[in-house]
Amino acid sequence: MKRSEKEQMVDSLNGIFTSAQVGLLVDYRGLSVSQMAKLRRGLNDSSAQIRILKNRMAKIAIRDTPFAALEESLTEPRALVYGEDPVGPAKVLAKFIKDQDKMSYISGVLVTGGEGSVLDKARMEALGNLPSKEELLVKLLFVMQGVQTKFVRTLNEIPASFVRTLAALAEKKGE
Image 1 (cartoon, rainbow, N blue to C red):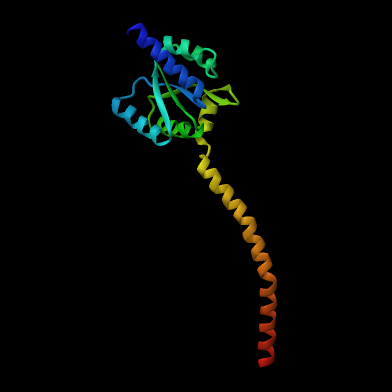
Image 2: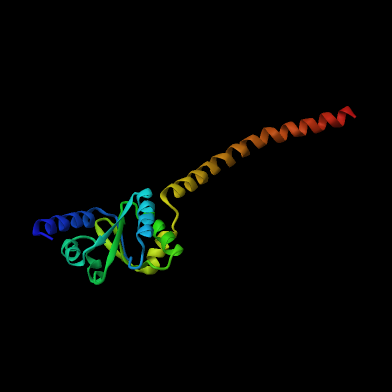
């Protein structure tokens, strides 16, 4: 590989490390091409991507970024799953890892406020089990709508009970 190609790859990786909100480092060895293509399609659907890392260039690109804590995990062939939405890539990856046993979690980083916090295997699995942003918004909408619905039913119950009382009195006098 020529030096200019290496510099371009380092710049590309640095762009990923500075802009992504989540990065999950995985061991991908043993996956077939079709399995990798299936994973890529699933990640593309959730606005995430996977990139096979060249460790030496990744170590150069990762310096002074929120992902710097991953540098010590770059020892063997690794792939980085990254994206803007922290839950989307984690959900796709969790489902993929559950379906087959060849891929495994190594480490991860969640970026909040420009600072990266390291995720271990348990935290990455927990992140994958969280509901998506859309699911949370729907739940919030139902909670907010439930309060208004109960209020309207309560207001409606006062005249309805009055009408039922009048109907009972009319039925009693009609006998």
